[in-house]
Length: 273
Ligand code: FES
Image 1: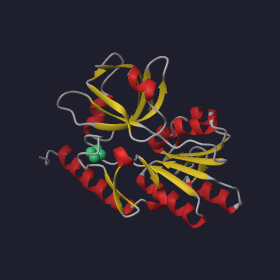
Image 2: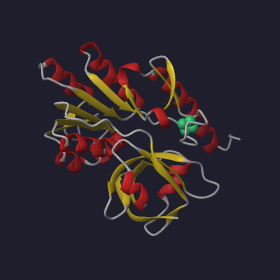
Image 3: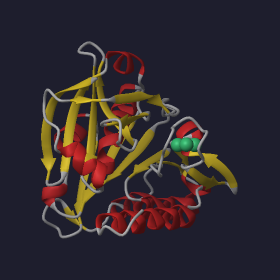
Image 4: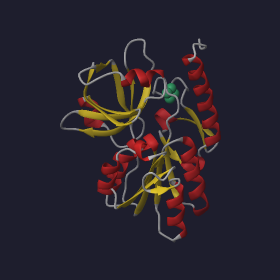
C-alpha cells in the first residue's frame, strides 16, 4: 500500500495528493509518470508526477475528477492507501541549457509543466511561462510557477484573472515581437497543444508536447496508448510521453479520445458493458 500523506483541493474538482513512494521519489525525473490502481477491481490511471521530494520519499500527483476512477480516487483521504503505484514510467524530459524556453500549461496541464519549468530554470535557461484556465477558480500552481519562471503570463478564457484569451495569444505576440525562443514545452488539453504546434510550426521553433492518451499496462505491450508521430506508430508510455509537437497527429489522437469519452458517458448512464 502507498499511503496518501497529504490531500489538498487546488480548484473545484482538481485534487493534489502527496503519496509515500520512496523508491519512485528517489529515481523520478521531470516528465515521467506513474500508473496507479486504487484497488484490485480498479482500472489503471496514468498520472504525470507533478513534484517529488527525494528526502521525504514522496511524490505529488495532481488529477481532475473526470471519470469514474478519478472520482473514486477523489474520495480517498490522508491516511488512505493506493494498492499499486508503478513508476517512474516514460522518458524524462530532455533538459539542457537551450536559451529561452517558453513553458505553456493549460488547465490541469500546469501540473506536469511545473517540475519541467523548474528543471529548465535550474539548467540556466530563461523561462517564460504562460499558464491558462477557463476561469480564475480553475487556475492551479500560480505561485509555484511564478517561483520557477523569469516571467509568468496568466490567461483565462473569461478574463477573470490575467489576460482574457487563450495561452497561444501571448505566445504569438512574443514571436511577432521578434523575441528569440529556443524551445516551447506545452502540456494541456489536446486541442491546446495542437494550437501551440500550429503557432510555432511556421517559425520552426522546436516544440515539445506531453501526451496523455489512454494507458493500460504502461509497458508498451497493450497498444492502448498508440499515437501517430511522424506517420509512425508510437507508444506514449515507452516512446514518450513527450514528442515533437510538429510531428504528432493530433486529429487522430482527438478521435481516439472522443471514442473513449463516449464509452465513459455510456458507462455512467448504465449503458456500458
Ligand atoms: Fe499499453 Fe502503452 S499503455 S502500450
